Image (cartoon, rainbow, N blue to C red; front, side, top):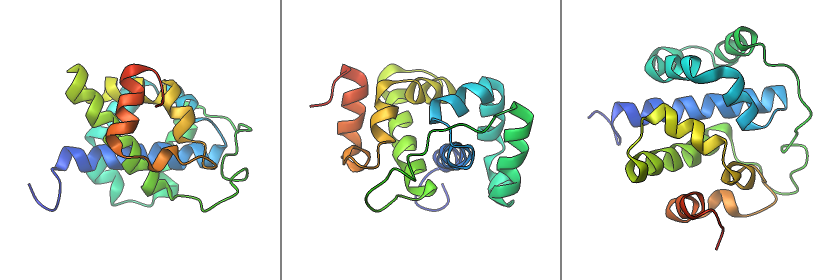
Length: 151
């Protein structure tokens, strides 16, 4: 391990941050970006994250948006935000922690856990920047996912 976390956790952080960046850029829900990318592209991003991370994120996102045929949407949680907006890196960290929790609790592959996380009701709650849910304790977000309710 080099740095504060292992390489694969950092690769997952970049993957989730890139998904957030693409969603903001195209004004799509995060699940729509994940589903358009598909498992194979997400796996590729995850496996080559250290390479993509050293490139310009605009260029990397444009390449994947084009390759996956992601069209401009109308979901603008940035424009709708009344308060401080977390960065795509902040949100990458939130999703990374959720995905790692799902991997730990469900014993499934990281990419499968990522797809499950973004396609859950929790993703809609995380992406509402007018609520406080996205900065809840990671265990609270995971519990909401696991138990299907927000306490």
